[in-house]
Structures are given as structure tokens and as C-alpha cells.
Length: 217
Length: 188
Image (cartoon, rainbow over all chains, first blue to last red; front, side, top):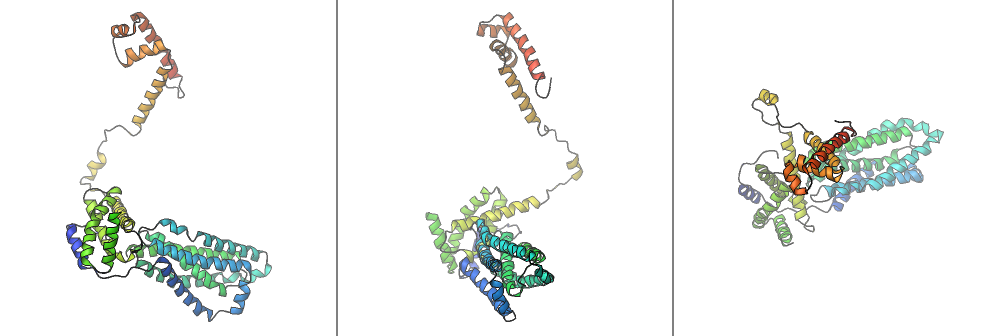
């Protein structure tokens, strides 16, 4: 793209016309976001085979855990939608703010869970799960991020870093949603810190690496 | 609005593979693209480069155009982005210097930055001091000192005697010296 042009613009127009093939317009952003969420749900189904669903019901009965899971799910959906919208030229960058309310719910409910755990002495028994969470979140975020970048490249992201960072948020939030069946009920402050750091790392990596990939698209 | 509808229809046809409509579309887009990249500050050959970059991006991204939405905002967003890319490239490119030593050693004889500002501040300060003088003294300063008219001319124009004008000028200069010396920074 950086090559400077020396030929007349008429020649370029002629070449582009010759290269023209019928092309199907991309599906709307909502449909593409749902496709991606369906792929994330498939990973969730695969993981459900090894999760303890009896424990899951008990965890989801706890209000703050239920709210945190709902917040993460909504963040994944809204961030994916915002990423697909911002990948289309001419759409406002303000769409990037769409996941903020859901992310606030996710972070707030997680913080409440952490506070509840801090008041419960039994919670300390689960303090060693942090590194496992890091591995889980990273391992699930990675394929979801790659899939999202591949899908986003089909559009024309003019703000590649912003779009890729939104994709990172979507992937990290989806991974956090899928983590719910595997996580102990009481999340400690260490757990929350590791979750937060991992989510931020996934967003930053997507913003940098994904942004470069999208810029070349 | 006619242009918008014409371009949107041509783009829909181009997405369907209509080469004639596509060629006409690209040519019709040229002035729109050129205006958009000029609005970002590009000039000369850089405009042509950005126009061609925009056409190439338009071609690659044509699937991202949603036929249900307006075409011009989509096109202008691509053109603006390509213009910004061109400006960034130009900013990163080192300037050509054939004789670095001479370039570094060259003396810039233009006034230093801020000098004009200081002069304007002094002039404003003086104008305030003159405006604060009594009417007779102010007239003497304005006519004799600032406009550099002769005593005879000013005397004839104002009807005041030459001695009165000289006395007023003398008193005015004394008052100005006192007021400017007593300014906030104590400058004489």
C-alpha cells in the first residue's frame, strides 16, 4: 500500500474494472456477531461435556455470580457487534462505547463476588486456582480472537487497532463466560486480579497484533 | 442527493459484476475522493497518490458496502483514512539534506520566536499609558511625537500656542516615564 503511484489514474481504473468479479455484500454486523457467538457457543458445548453441571446450577444461584456471568456474556455480544460495526467504513467510532454498560455490570458483579469471598474464610481454600484461570482464559480467547480477526478482515476496518481491541474484549469476555462452569464459587481478590490482568492482556494483544493484521487486509 | 443515488446504484451494479457501471462509478468518484483528501491537507502529487490508494481500497473493500446504506459516507471515510495514512507517511519520511554540516550551521536571521509578541505587549502598554494622559498632554504626544507633525502644523490645527504644546509634551513625557517605570515589572 505504501508504493507510490506513477501511472495515470485511467490505467488503474481500467485494471480495477478488469479485476471486477461479482461479490456478495457482507451480512449485517448483527448477523456476523451472532455467527461468531455461535462459534463461541460450540466451544462452550464441547467444554460442557467435562464441566460439573450440578455445581454450575449452584453457582448460578448466587446472585453476584449470575450477574457477573450475564455481564460477561453481554459484553462478549456487544463488543463483537461493535467490532463488526466499526469494521465497516463510514460507521461512527462511538459504537466502541456499546459494550461499556455490560462491561460495567461484569466488573461490578465480579467485584461484589470478590467482596463476598473476602468475608468468607472458606474462600481461601480456592486461592490457588488463579493460574488455572489464566491458562483457561488465554486458551479459549486465542481461537476466538483468531476467528474474529479472520471475520473482521473481510470488511475494511479503517481503525484497525480499535476494531481489533473490541474483538479482544469480545473474545476475553466470551472466555470469561465459558469459565463460569469451571470456577470455584468464591472468587478471591487474587482470582479477580488475575482475571482482570488476563482480560487486559488479551485486549492489548488483539489491539496490537490483530490491528496489524487488520491494517494489512 | 442525485449524485448519491447515482453512485449508490452504480455500486450495487458493480457488486453484481457490472464492469461498465463500475468503470463509470470509479471515474465519478474521482472528484469526490480528490476533494476529501484535499480537505485533509494533501496537495500536489500527494493528492493523486491518495486518490489511487482510495480506489484500490474501494476495490478491495467493495463487499463491505451495504446497499441499504448511503454510498458517499462510505467512500469519504475510505478517502479520509487514506489521506491520513499519506500524511503520516510524509511525517515519518526524513527530509533530504545534501549537506548536513551546512544545514546544521546555517544561521537563522529571522527574529527569535516571541519577539513580535513582546513588541506588541510594549506597544499596548504604551498605548494604555498615553490614553490615561489628560486631554491636552495626550494631544501633544499624539500629534508631535507619534505622528511627527511640526509645532507650526499642530498649532494651526489645534489653535493652541506653540509654547503650550511644548509644555504639554514635556509634562506628558514626564508622566509617561513615571507611569511606565512604575509598571508591574518595573521596566524603565
